[in-house]
Image (cartoon, rainbow, N blue to C red; front, side, top):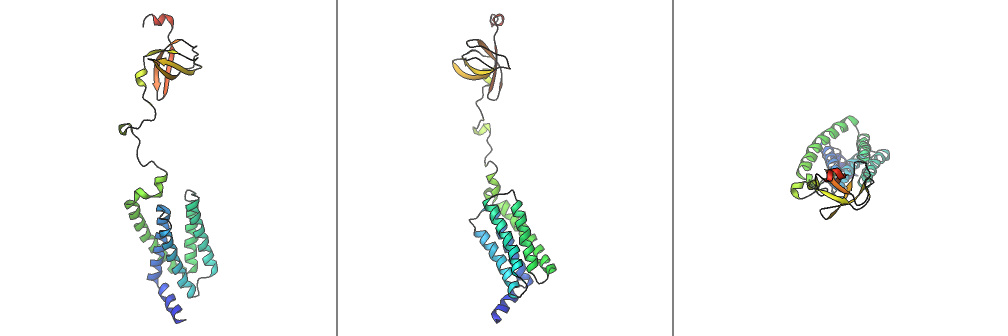
Length: 224
């Protein structure tokens, strides 16, 4: 009994309780941000568990408070499994902090401890994000390397050199089809007009992968 009382007094001391809240917040937040295979989450849960244990042994924390806290944990775990763009994380955090305040002997004192823990946690989390930004969860949603032409990446072949060249349609262009230009089969399109098979064409524009052609009329061909 004496051990339980001493343990409760130690765990509920404002400094100890604040440190436990820091560990809890930092551990769970970093787990959500960096996915450390559950190690940081385990540390966070341990911090909160010791906080609740202290107030439970002191006779202040009840099963209702633990239930609210437990719901918060479940919501955060669901966020890891089924990303909800932060909705489950926010709801989970509200339940966690609500459970912390309800379990305390004095909600006002608990709010102060929670505020201090949050401020310290924000500093630590910001430092972790800056230091390990290449490992963050946000890297799942952005390209790790910018794909630029100077690095050899192209979204489509550059065919601007075809502008002004002549060729022959090998399929009807309705308005899209295929033409032979300098011995190469090229997918082409007209500006809406129909061009029959085996007609002389000229490339008038290239818009990305879209090669625009028009038919060369007989009177124009004589001048080419």
